[in-house]
Image (cartoon, rainbow, N blue to C red; front, top):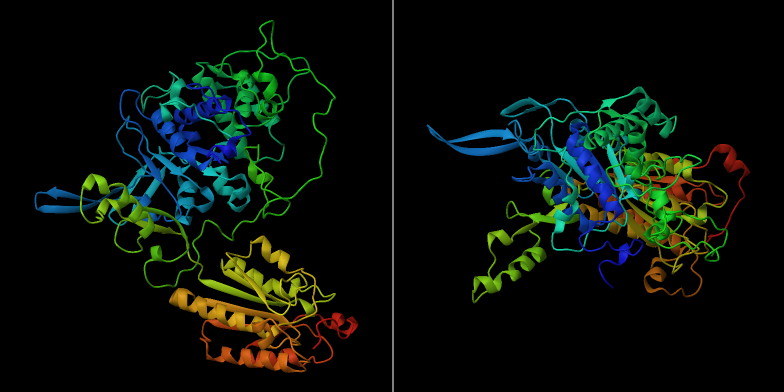
Length: 632
């Protein structure tokens, strides 16, 4: 399997010549360079290995043609406020070494004509809260005010932002953050020229209107017809930021073309540039005009439908597309693949991918969760990548050994030598400080919808960004009905949690094994996170009628009648919870109100040291049928 296999849906560009999508991308980057109001560029579904060449091309467009290019600043999951806004500097003064604070990489230099910095975000969905706040504060802002310890500065932000995001993750991001990116393009299947120039191949068409950094551009005037046409191209209920961004992009295109006024043709060219469909007139012929003509940029829908026809060369006259009713392939039934609902994840062809994405956003995504932990935050959380080590804490040993192995022959040492330049540290995502453990007994549900009873616990986990551990017993789809099954989720937005709430009920109820797994999950969480785990909730939804002994769950064999052995084993397993830290652990048993033996949930809550929560309403308990599957 070659590394280019994911891009088979688009033909490779000829050597030395960028394809149509690459030319559109270069033109969009040039518009961002011309107009500081278009500082934010967001690319959907860009292949990860293309982030570096695209960023390098953007830096070359920002820099001086005869001088240095812009210096990229990488932001990720570990970016902090003190790393972005300020920078400590040691200088030699009259009285010795002087420690001062200077503006950070986001603000850039104050010199007139200096190259503006380029901020690169490889994955916008994984960007830290501090980085998201910085993007909201800087992008499309006229003035940025920074007040940190030892530094106070007011200036106009000139940094350009290049962010990458998957279209399926757009629903997880804040609308305020997405609206700050004035230029948004779907670039799935982007192909770069296969030559030795690398990123320089993207900047082959540097417009002359760019000039040197800091050179003021002669703006094209915006006419009333252009404003009205932009509103016609967008939906009536669209946001004002989208309309303003599209109008600024049309003005930048007119400026690059050397026009004095922005016309409706420039508005249509801007819409096609970012991937919006533009209605075509009834009688229109396709022309072969160059990229400098605003109307020569086709829409992605046209490029996708007639890509084969466009690749043909007709020397006798202009290209025309003939409609046909013949079906090339017989339709096949839809087949779902992948782990997401509805089959495989699809890439969006719209610059506003959040309109079609499922809105699974975190609560207050631009605010940090409450922190009450001790120790450096960089050593907690799941490892999401590596970076150059700043100290000797939390080293990435595999990456460090691999970097050192590359230079062993050059160093010519008899022993395996590790240099400071070889050291890499782990990049970790923020570790959740709260944990919700759900123990679901499917045999007690019957015709009862327990979603209302679970709503308070799920809402608490959603607001507190808690991790979730789901333990299921009595599941008809279980691999082994004598044992409980469990899975861990990063938060309540995991689609597996919703699927677990409505599984069919089985025959066996290994309640004792489920309680034992809940106890092991708690011990593991307290042992791994220590004081970093602030609060834990254990919610048990059951009727207490366990009919599988703990011995049968461990051995996988059920011998003879069990009687009340399964219930007694559940009580014994629950009694072990009393030795745990009750200052951080809260236990609640949701009463299913099943008759007979309606006293079992209360006895189980007493052994667990928790409280009983009413599950069914009074009228539901009176009309529900007695008994059900899963009785011991």
